[in-house]
Length: 154
Image 1: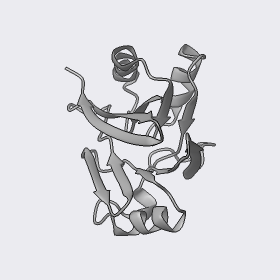
Image 2: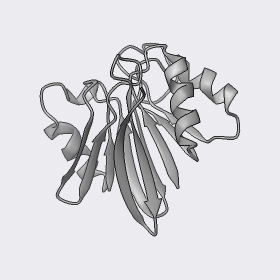
Image 3: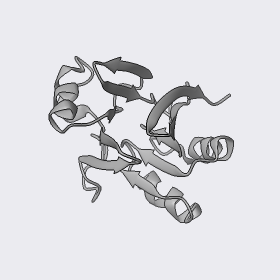
Image 4: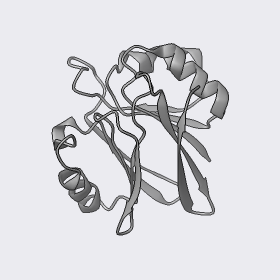
């Protein structure tokens, strides 16, 4: 399964469209900061499953603060990250993901791409698809193993 992970689009829907076109994902995950982009992109790609959480710029959004789900036996925990103060430290959000038995932690907010293992937890921040760096992450799940590659639009 190929998963496109986006965060902090801040209304830049053209970058989202470009990433979808380049990556041909089977699932899109949006980690907040402009949850309104989620609804628009969902309408444009009705064949693609889509999950979204709200960020600090999404006041009034109906999207949840966090989302937890399992795909092919891999447990995911996704959040924007602002509620866990990720700009100062990843410790709180990592502890929350571990407490919830996650295998993969996805968060945004910092606009800084990050891909690392903490014990058995894969910790990923796709950066910002809406910034000048135009970064995102692509996850691949094969035979119960997840891998991540950080990507940039040209």
